[in-house]
Length: 250
Image 1: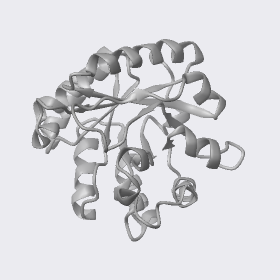
Image 2 (image 1 turned 60 degrees about the horizontal axis):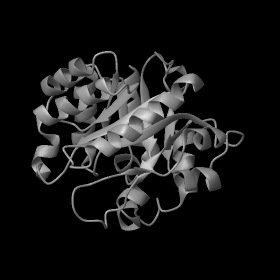
Image 3 (image 1 turned 180 degrees about the horizontal axis):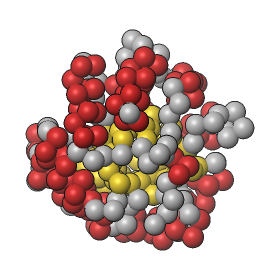
Image 4 (image 1 turned 90 degrees about the vertical axis):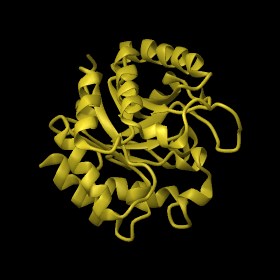
């Protein structure tokens, strides 16, 4: 297996996600977080194990010389404006990610979409190309499509299935939704086998509720969480970062 040492600390990790501008639009990012420099400062000062960016922001704002936080480059993406079953195609190569200083790469697969086979095939090629470079590959694995309603996206059986897909397709880490309880997340961790599991932070919720989710997934065997809006939309991003770190690393 590929070493995750560059993007973990003692086997655990917190990543700061900032691919929402493409995926959800600038309104969802907010007026302060619209500035990538603001996010990079949080990632650096907060001691995150990785910052997740699309290639354009990485190219224009990130450099390994300026920032100690490792870069995790997202290789595919889509907007919210398209209709029908979701499909997220590759927009950046593994080679280009490496040239931008990436310590790992990520890719979203929408299982249940009628286009899932296209995304799985692209993901397979990415794994094949990343292996000789010892570059970890992270799968964002979300149940989504016309056969899956909004409430079913986080249904336990679907989230557990998503975790298993990550293992079956060769992901080093699989990022999945919170499925509602410690017990169901533990089943997802078990389904993922030797593939490490991280929780997707999701939309902004109150701090108490979010930190309770973090406690549950860590108790279930996750290696950490990937947070975006629940950190950089908070009134005190560095304060909630410290609360997250206490749970994940202690």
